[in-house]
Length: 366
Image 1 (cartoon, one colour):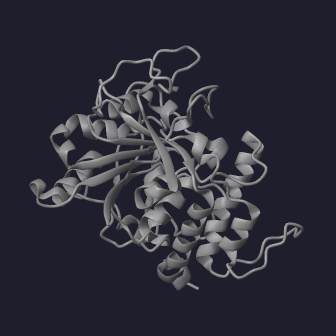
Image 2 (cartoon, rainbow, N blue to C red):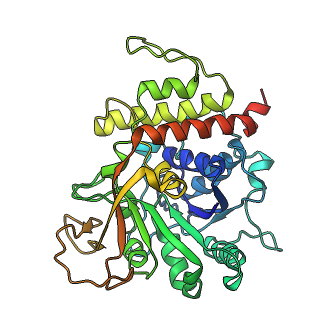
């Protein structure tokens, strides 16, 4: 079983990543970090930072997470650039259109925020450090894989402040970037564009890194057939049917509203007609089932100064740059996913939904 720390900015597809992190049997979710409530109204990530931490806690409650898994708010702004968020895709609160999640004021939600003795929040990088140190036990325990499904600001701060703990990190896995393509500029993917300097800091770290780019995540499409099986596994799907089946549980209804809103946003913004891509869920799938992916090791850097290309992931496919075999600043620093076994991924995804059905607090309320 792999111990993982998950840094998220929920976000519809982040929510599906949280569901998998809680319900895949071969991963052990140790903690969750997010953006923190902003000052002066600034925002960072998929939604205003005041929403992202609450959304993460709401999802953990809904998806049956153990109460030991706490939420640690972190950076509210990128390292250097002005903060931004993406209401066009995710709505103003990051989970637009989603029904059935616990209310933000639910005491079960507030109970998941890590607190110090004086009642203040424990910062993301402090929570990461404490948790990873506890798992590592000075080499007597196990390493932790750190997963990022949003801007990598918290991860960059952690590797900078707690560099002595890098020996306890198995791998950094991030959803972000693209090979020759972007989605929120001509060449930049959104997560990297939000904080390109943080991404470069993480890429420079001498620890194994794996990038799940949009070239691959755009193949993980929730088609109407998959959506139908999500709602009701035993229903007979017909391509000619105008309506999806009724959800057999409150959990499945909530997951369906996540998919439906995301589908509408991706259809109107990017022209995805068959369904939305589950970008962030693929990070958990990779850690739990790496055999689903084919990968190639490359030198990857981030464009930090380009007028038209800020945030572009420069994947040195043709090996122009002279590098060594290390994972750090001068090396071939990143595994890049090339392909995904889409059919097998969705079978595992639907299996996780079935497990979640047995423990979800949403179903216990029905």
